[in-house]
Length: 493
Image (cartoon, rainbow, N blue to C red; front, side, top):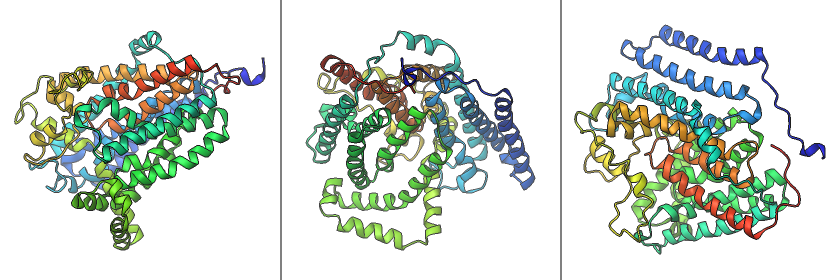
């Protein structure tokens, strides 16, 4: 047995270092609260500020404690999700709601403007929701379920991983282009085909895994060849998330393999998104006004380039980045709609009794067998009932918001605990140090879906995850059946 095949011993955290990390975050939170009071937080926002500090402290303490754990026991999914949760529910308070900007009609998600009391209730729900998710995560139920759940234990060779990527990427592009050209009818459904379409991006994650685990030069070359055109095409769709997705896939793979999350990566992601946001906003308006698809714009891009140049020429660099950061903070937030739902559900809008949650099992019925199957989208209903009636738009409710407008506080309590259990199942199944390449790919998919989906509906963390992981299991069965085990195993994580 060679030295490379021996797993690294678990390094226990230093007692003093662990204590410093655990204590320092609450102490900083206490100091921040005192500073806020000293500089004059308005009296009707002190409760909001305090709840925000408690939520931020809890989130950052969870991250700090996890970083102190041995590498093989780190909860990568929970840590990355926690940073996303921080952006969606803590940053908006600092950016909008301690001052007056968040309470203007321009910032309000509905014609009825939010008040500090409304936002304080929303912040309380965000704190409770995160705490309950943690409670569900730490109870052993999720770990027990993961032990009996199917696993992808057979490792893939570098050649097999590259081969699967070379299949999934073209299939994904076929679905994307078929949608752009109107060749895919609505009755074909969106769940399975959407998962196949995401293969164009998830294939990049698979190439990154082949490079990280085997140092495959072929995988690196393909990664360099595929990523730029994917980003360029996604740029012309005006989707900020899709534009950054190849870079995010590479970053998540690096985090899973090294089991470390660098803070500057998160800062860099926000800055890149802020730099792209003003351009994407103007370009999206141009694309919708012209009625052209991304393919049509690429075929004749002069008008799009003129719009982009106009945006860049219209601002000084510092003003441009300020605009982008404000727009990003506005986009990456769920506190406004959560506060609105808590204010209006059960009064102006009756509690719904769970009809939107019924979409989770309904989604598994193929539309080919049920032509009258309803569109499994609640964003339009949320817009109509909680935002602006008569406006054709899709508004994410947040997970807590959907649970609340169905069952009130009981829905939040039960639903967030169940989500915490589900998070633990996914972490234990796909992101352990014994994970194979297909398992890690499923982990990449899971992290992406959950970290970006907290502002949406509950189909995201449930069915969307399953629909995107299922093809990986199917492909693993084919690889295991048709290819021999790797002649050379990758080094231990």
